[in-house]
Length: 415
Figure 1: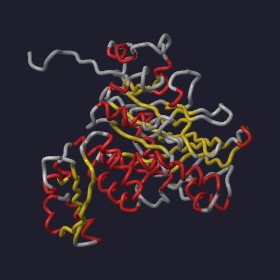
Figure 2 (figure 1 turned 90 degrees about the vertical axis):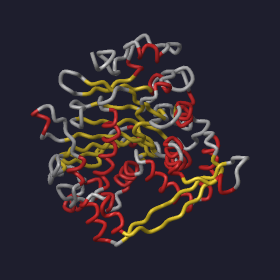
Figure 3 (figure 1 turned 180 degrees about the vertical axis):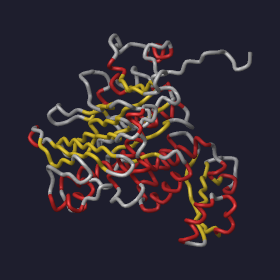
């Protein structure tokens, strides 16, 4: 089993200074079902962390930071991965060309690992991996420049290009510890905002896994969407027929590989009593955005809950009723989650800010932006004194107790 202890990012997007999102359980006693227990009690971790804050505060950049880390350690170099993953804090001159800093601490089969990487748009400038066998910190490798490896295996270092992580090359070389860490990072599941892509992926996964198909249908029924079954058909579309609707560069890239593209038509079957078979079957494009979102999201959530891992969601609940969003979060409680899966998500659904029935105080996080310099900060509800188990957190938040909310200056736009 692998789980996230915490992750850190700095000089990334609006986060000028290092911030850390921790999933280490504090000594709070509420909601024990939201804690992934370790054998010795020293590594008890949270099953979810939910991030709140106003628009443009930086919530999505917390997700993007994990995605950037995923891409950087997935790449073998020789491409534009670093360029796309390099998003420094651009308000300050000293940060604009400085390295991005990313780090993650993991618990893998009971052993702690601490991986750090710094990079620009062209090269890796620092990198290290430590672990804690027998609870003592030990160095696996260290890199202090694109081609400087004071503590590393020379054979691997010689094969590591300036735009490639040592972690990647050591994993390819079958280094056990590096492989475990890289697999944990690249194995994180990201729920894309494009529900149509998720729907297609979900359909294909269900073809390969009948048990998942049954679980998906059961989930859709539990969510009260009225869907009893689904099917799909794939077809080919001539590129010439869509040339005018595709960006020129996309069209040219596609044309180099084929003269057609595949499309998928997905149909859901409802249990309407007063309709014939044709009337019960509806193309999913005609369904609400919430139904499409739920269908696609389940394809990401079910394998993680079943097999373990980390699900990362940007804008959880953007198209869902608040009760369905709560239900998604509750899937990660111990009575549903025997594999130790974790959820990291940002949201505008204030109904999740519930410490009475849903979340612990150390699971609620806030992102707030400094209006003077544009930098963002991250902090946890449990950092505040005087917040008790019976505190009406939502009311306090709306009253400005924890900041991290928009300030609406006027009642209207027109005078």
